[in-house]
Amino acid sequence: MIRSYSIVLPFLILTVIGCKNTSSEKEKLSKALKKPNIVMIYADDLGYGDVSAYGATAIQTPAIDALAKEGITFSNAYATAATCTPSRYSLLTGVYAWRQKGNSIASGDQPLLFDTSKPTLASILQSVGYKTGVVGKWHLGLGGKEGPDWNGDIKPGPLEIGFDYSFLIPATGDRVPCVYVENHNIVNLDPSDPIQVNYKEKIGNWPTGSENPELLKVKPSQGHANTIVNGISRIGFMEGGKAALWDDETIAQELVKKSVDFINTNKEAPFFLFLSTHDIHVPRVANAMFQGKSGMGPRGDVILQLDWTVKQIVSQLKSQNLLGKTVIIFSSDNGPVVDDGYHDQARELLGGHKPAGNLRGGKYSALEGGSKIPLIVKWPDGKAKGMVSKAMFSQIDFFKSLGKLAGVDISGYKNIDSQDQLATLRGDDKKGRETLIQESFAGPLSYIKGHWKYIEPLEGPKLVPWGPIIETGFEVAPQLYNLEEDPEEQNNIAKDYPEKTEALRAALMEARKG
Ligand code: NG6
Ligand code: CA
Image (cartoon, rainbow, N blue to C red; front, side, top):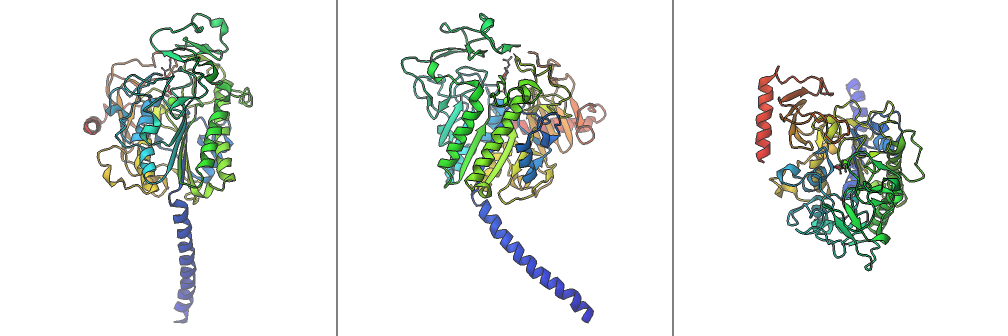
């Protein structure tokens, strides 16, 4: 008897103390997770191996690493595509971009790609009381059927699909017009100096990279030989709007400033900030603070600049006492590219650095390097701090997962690709998605189920044709890889497993139907 009491009593005491702890823990938990702010820092072209939290040693990214220490690092997370426009489209709609025609890399004067009557991640968060803002690269088209009216009201755009505020690089840093668009208008546009943009032929008299290469501070290696703005020739022609032109060297600062303003203005409400950085896309022109600091040339310098951006945003949240109320998500829109059209010494100074880590392929390709990206999630309640999750996650799931987190009734969104993977993002579900689809730049899709990956056959070039020296992953025969044993996709075992290959092909066909 005595013996059993002595065992039971301490057990009871421990249980009571344990319960107390658990219930107060729970209260804390629910408070931090009741409509938390959501800050998503979405980098451009940042590869799986580009930050030290993912194993880079030639470059250090302490602010991103600090997020990883405080949060969950996902080793098996994917953007939906290997290029920007489709990845962002899917992230915001929860629907694979390839389901709609014309969702490949958008031109700089493309009409808005979204159907404004359909929900987006921003609009569903807005519907439950969130203040929603997008700051940075857009590249999802603007304006109605005729495209953007640069000198008038530029709409529809983010404000018509659920954002309360927008401050945009309208397309990319390497596409004209090189101006910021705040809400519906170009910032600092002088009406007496209207802006003209043309993607088909030269417009106006501003010099171009092909005619006046002597005026360039960064020379193109492929394309990018149209209008010169700030000593850099771009894709597309423009003239006018001189007072509105951005300064490439201060884009990161400008985007941080607008993000900080957005945080400060909305600190009382729950807010969703989608900070879509220009870094590390081309042209890579770092601020003087970072120039020459990485030893790896401009590509390395802008990784340091990206890390600085993360530091500024986290510090701001901290100084406003918001870290305990904010989920911070850090990710990238597609895999890495070294030479993406400018001679910026990225290739020459790369040294031993591997932008895609050990993955094969990179931006544009059907291989893992195309869309397997870094993803770090830091929770306000400290959940799963320091964890590395191997669960499979796709950015398409942010729609439902963050919607659910914010208190949106997601049960009505039935016929979309997004899944509720909130438990995966929280670190509770260690498996994540069962299947996912990756989109390469030229059509063929890849299908992953568990650790098996199938790549559709395509008679296409082996290397991305315009010169970045990236394997496309295109083969005339079907490809099958065992990602568990062969994450580097070295052994195509389709012939050894014809039934498996056929099953995945059929499953992809089925998923394609939607
Ligand atoms: C390509 C551009 C590349 C980049 C890319 C879009 C050339 C030769 N290449 O067409 O520089 O702008 O489009 O990148 O023009 S993304 O990350 O926005 O998808
Ligand atoms: Ca990109």
